[in-house]
Image (cartoon, rainbow, N blue to C red):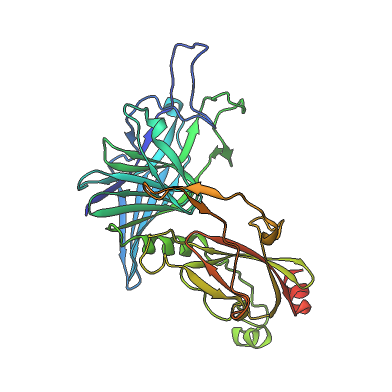
Length: 385
């Protein structure tokens, strides 16, 4: 499978003849001067290649204001593009810079999907003869192109605008913009932020995942969790003590969980509410039919989950935790299955709390919220408060 990656720029709309009905690009409006883009590179790349047992790395200086590092890690299923853009020159009214992934060998009709708030994937269709600005959609964490055989996905490290350029058969992601005009949609100033006397410099990462249709979803979901839920690193100076002495004095490792959660479950919230009371949320991170194994319902035993305390009482709440789920009275909704007559759907609020106390079952994409009473106030007061 062949993919070409590069950086390009749309030129913001500019007209030498001023009129009252002109619409410029700005904070809220994207309006390029042309449907095509100009290449950012000057065709004089400064390239350095490093190969090691853990990672292969290519460092590329594209021009005076853009560069990137491409990494392939040993025994992983993705390619990392670590980019640096800025300070963008202000010639020709500025630039709106994209990263483009051109796919050379699409087989059959392409289908385009973007994620909805990092969760379910939504099919995106381009209207005929629509302007380029109308083809950009919000990408919270992933944009995917599939054909009859293969799946191409780019994961982002932050929300961005993403598009499928049908003519170029490419994924486009908007990564930086600097414009000298204002769109006059609320902020009466140009999109021209500066720091230290120069235009803003932006750094970020894209992760390219390629494979066969139906086999990549679990790889992408797990990679997204790995990248978006990275641990925070803290460092302390060793003053007048050696590392071995420091290790003997202080506790070097702590985990609030007794065991790892299943790969398709995420502990979304752990928040103290009062002494001895904690709010928790658990989510199933896979869609229905997204993966043969990981899209199945999963049961989590809360009694065997947390290491610092034991649960004495469990009450399920609505998603916002402002109402017990048992007091939520919803209408029964009618829905069709194919051509069959309407069925009645009622929200399932049950959980296993009789024979299997505090075992909860999660279905694909489900988030469940609980308030728990615990038996260790000392832990809550010292760790949380």
